[in-house]
Image (cartoon, rainbow, N blue to C red; front, side, top):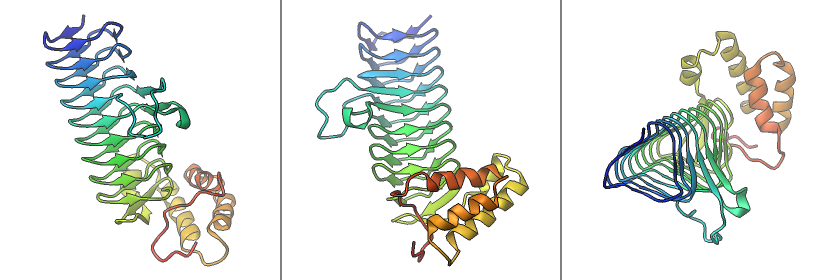
Length: 266
């Protein structure tokens, strides 16, 4: 049975799962679906065609599903999908998609979105993403699994952030971040691999050693282009899944640009 505070406003048409908790002064729009055991602590506003997955907890003053921050948006019927087991903290915002960007913003499972974080329109986020206080994603950003964003970091529109990477606090990301990478700086530069994250997630010593070798050959090599070095490394370390993941990310589209170490000429 749902527990709904008498001051909350649940509009006709909203769908509530089993054991939903809706606290004081929340507003839930007519096309919102809340999964089982979702909790809205208080003063949460959810609008638009928005789905919130089971056991997700939303804290005060979060705003989910309101009109995208895109001047081209003209009221199209677009979607925000938030997965299961997320924590969405105070003052966080997530916008739905736009007609020009695929029509959906999608957030995976098990994420932590700290105070003031923002997920822009048409973003696609994987599982176990952490966004620290006031981290922001522009529109159309793709984020893979197990990515961490430091406080006050910002990602430009259309960038891709690879799995198991980390974006430092106060970092502005203009280009794609490779899987397992660590980027820092007011204009993000690649500072190495996210070795602490890899160890915490139980990557084997052999896998990490291979990835470090591949990284050095791709980003510190002097012969050929960045792309040609990535192709060479892909063959050399064919038995290591992490290296294949990194190189596949880099070789998929010749037009993509990547964060690289400082003074890298590629």
